[in-house]
Amino acid sequence: LYWCPPFLLLLQPLQTFEPEIKRRQQKGIMGKDRKKEGGLKGFFIRAGRSFFIGGKFAKDNGMWLSMMAGKLGFIIATTSMVVMMPLLFEIGRESQMIESERVQVKDLRNKGYSDRQLQEMGFSEVTVHSPSVSL
Image 1 (cartoon, rainbow, N blue to C red):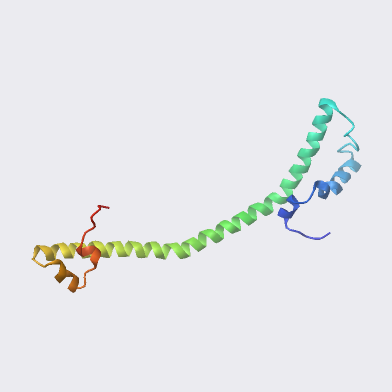
Image 2 (tube, rainbow, N blue to C red; image 1 turned 90 degrees about the horizontal axis):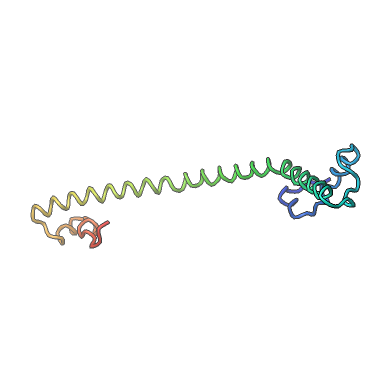
């Protein structure tokens, strides 16, 4: 037997599970040829076989799928922390600096400085001219 990723098993037909079915038939867990049975009894027998095959597939591949999802989640979480946290800190720092400059500009305006003088002192355009739309 060769190894393949479990998600490829979804693409394969159900013949993949034939060895397991044959093993169970030999043990007597499942009947040999029950497709000939019809009616409600035959429906339940075929449904039980289908649920068995689906349950086996879920059992075999559920752990692998959950581990892959956990790894992907960990990668996304750590990458976003490394990339986004410094950006958020910088945005917070810049907003504090703008607020500090606005307080200084307000104080200097009360002392009689004009907008042009404030810009020549090095204050940014955002702090000298308050936005026309309130945030």
